[in-house]
Image 1 (cartoon, one colour):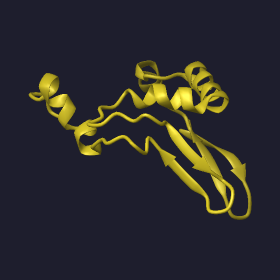
Image 2 (cartoon, helix red, strand yellow; image 1 turned 180 degrees about the vertical axis):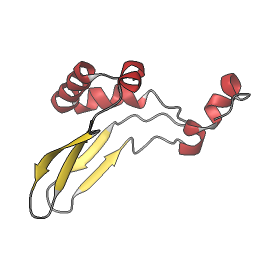
Image 3 (tube, one colour; image 1 turned 30 degrees about the horizontal axis):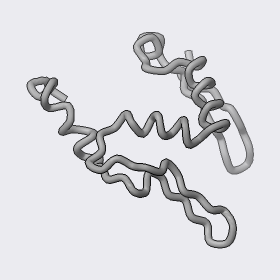
Length: 104
């Protein structure tokens, strides 16, 4: 049994789809239905969608504007630009209180 199958074949690019093992899929935080729902929300109302998901991480200074984009002239794309966070803190440190004695 192959774990992947080609999605697109061309002279220069081959895109492949990985088949997620059932155990991993059953334990996943998201499934296809939730993904499609979230995708639709992200396209229809990106400020609301990303504003909600931005609250899933810790901020030292919370943002007041979710996105600030301009695609005319000089392209500018800024997310949560007035917020201040720390990626290392969000990946590691915030888990120490409840899971600090567990092996990563």
